Image (tube, rainbow, N blue to C red; front, side, top):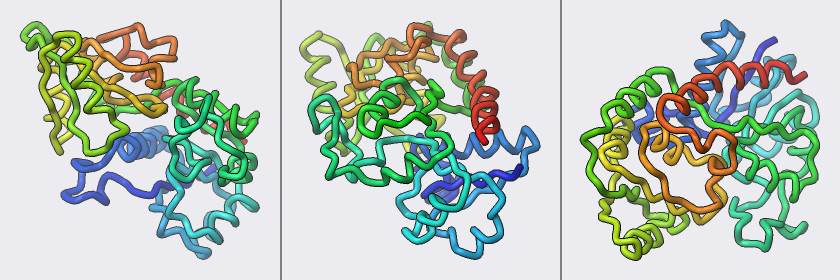
Length: 287
């Protein structure tokens, strides 16, 4: 079987390449692609704006794995929905335009505001990253094709670095990291207030280089990540816990609903290493 992985952006699309400016979704999608390559699967990746009728004709017998699809031409997306086998690999909540179901009571979006309903319904499977994300999809769309993958993906090289940082945690500063962000939904202001109320020393962190950023998280004893929208998983929080850093967040952190969330350090790192085999098994068993 041939697999086609589609995302709006890949790490190499960002300035400098290598994912220095990319987000968690792009990093996760790239690792998913590399897992399929390592398993010797017949796999190819496309950026969603590049999909054309010619590509669809060429890939008519393939299974499509759609990550982000907002930039797929509507006609192309309709063809995939109606004529192809496909899986949705969800990083957010694309059934509502602003992707923020927390704006509504119990996360229930008014039916007149729901979008892409047929796309979700016709998918062979809809992959979620947490039981919180899965429940919100069920409550809004009534789907029976949802699978909770329960986690996210990191390369083995990055997990090796995270393990090293976890083992070298004795020299940490007794303070909390708060990740700088221009987006209100990331809760920077609330995180600062939390630290002030608790009497915690804190520092704002952030770096365009991913490895440098991980070093910053590992340098402090705590992380305050004040989720204001339902994070599908929350990579930063999981990274912190894998490094033995204490995480302060809210119930909107998807990871906090998973059975492995109480783990830290190597135990949690091993769980995320196993996700490579797990995601491959899940996606290749869908037919």
